[in-house]
Structure formats: structure tokens, C-alpha cells
Image (tube, rainbow, N blue to C red; front, side, top):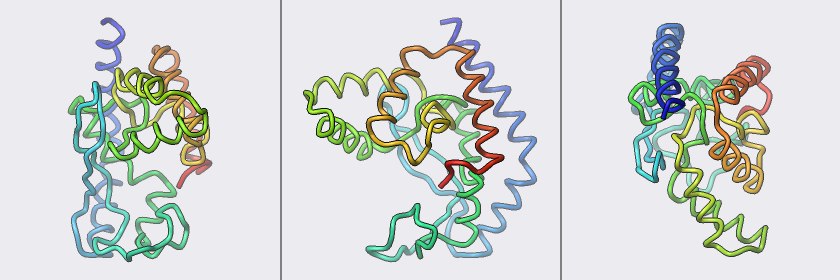
Length: 204
């Protein structure tokens, strides 16, 4: 209970300070996104949150509204669905900054497992079962534990390979965080995240 309270206080103070600090960047990015292509500035999508409850996540829109069918992966450098501004803000993780408002509202934390969709959860469970050859019920239990903590802007997976981390690694790192979360771990993850962002290592 004390850990949750302290973590929430850190989330509130951290998100407010961060929003104030990056406000000029938020404004410039919003203008750039709007100028380059038609559509909303923010991309909104339902993700799985604490205790499997769905919430709407905010990100800067990095793709054209009318996407090209059967295009390359969104992570591909030359994906025609991604705008020029979108490619830049993905590389620098600027597209993630609106999630600070998700943290401020209490739906997310600064640190925690990555917020993913219901389909992504099901795909991960199926992939883990397939690769580990274990019962589906056991993997579902892992994800029940994973969702006992709020999803975060950054986490163990993001500082250990980010998008390059496979299903097995991502699942096990998320479980490790959920079972052993503490303020020391959070601070270490935040520090490593800053280094990764500055060096652009492991970004999409």
C-alpha cells in the first residue's frame, strides 16, 4: 500500500514536471503533425491496463489516416504508412510523450509493463505457449500477474531491447517487474530510459 502511494505521488509530480518541461516540444510536434497530413494530432487506442481494465492511450499520430493496405511493417524505415514527421518522432520517442497525460490521470505509471492491446495480449499468450510448449492456462496466469500493476511509459522490456525483445523475453521481463517492483528498480529503469533516448539505442 505504501509503495503504491509513493509510486503514485512520484507519477503525479514526475508527469507534471515533465509536461511543463516538454511543453514547447509538445506544441511544436502537434503543429508539425497537423501541417504534414490531414487527421487528428493524437492517435488514440484502447489498451489493457491495471486489472485487465481497458483505457485509451494517447500518442502523437505518426501514420497517415488512410493507410496503404498490405504495406510494410510500421517499424520499417520506409513504410509508406508512416509520415516524415512520424518517422522522426518514433526514432526519438517523442510520439510517446502524450502518455504523460495518461500517467497524470492515473491510468498509467511512469514505469511498468508496456501497454498493449487485447489482441497483442492474446498473440503473446499464443506465442509463448507455442515457443515454450506449456499449458495455455499457465501463461494466462502470467499475464494476470502482469496486469496487477499499471502499464508504464517505460519498463524493464524497454530498457532491455525494446522493440527487439521477443515474446519470451518481453513476457518474462514483465513478470519479473510485476513480482519484484520497488522504487529502486523504478529509478534504475528511468535512468536507463534517459540514456536509451539520448543515444537512440533500441528505438523504432
